[in-house]
Length: 260
Picture 1 (cartoon, rainbow, N blue to C red):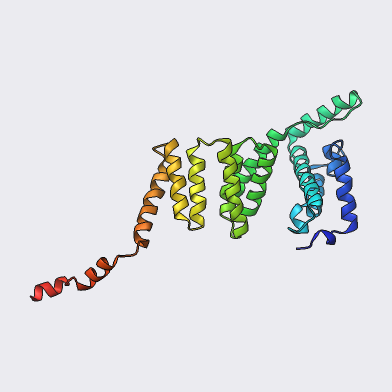
Picture 2 (picture 1 turned 90 degrees about the horizontal axis):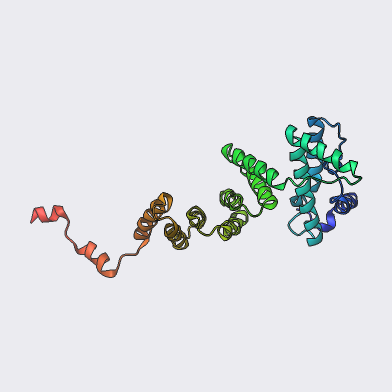
């Protein structure tokens, strides 16, 4: 992956242009389309811009200043795309623009909560289709747009825990911690943390979190089932003592007893 110094100058200029104008540009201007643009035009423009402005495009060693700018830009691009490709949302947005412009000051509509829910639903659909990477992006976007909803973090944590890359799986812990922080009484979120620890074969910490889940919901089925599995696994892993080892060696077989 390229480092920050490898970002083409033309792209740097575009990033800086976005950064200067995001708070005053309309969603049409953010996607570089006209107000009469068709859905196809908007989708085409979105794909082109995302290919240039995705934070991961320029590597993990990206200069923090540029990383922050790109994340903000990427979030706004997704927001613009989701509004303008939804017919009813676009109509409402256009009406709000006309009303605002009548007063000489175009304003963007605060639709973060609605868009977050739409992103969350897209993430669920992607998971059903086993499209893991898009699902992670949708859940991450939902959590950024509405950070007060613990379910967005929980679904993000679950999706991350399924990723084959250990670094991505590690991020699942932080996402799950956010869900628990928002709603620490949820047995489901504590059980989810237990599940994540199981993905790392850490059954001791998994057991701790499943037991925490049961403190909030003593009948939590998933936690009960997993605790039984953990108890069995621990028993299988437990080394036999010397007495047990020699006892099994010296103990006469049933066939020997019959001979005697």
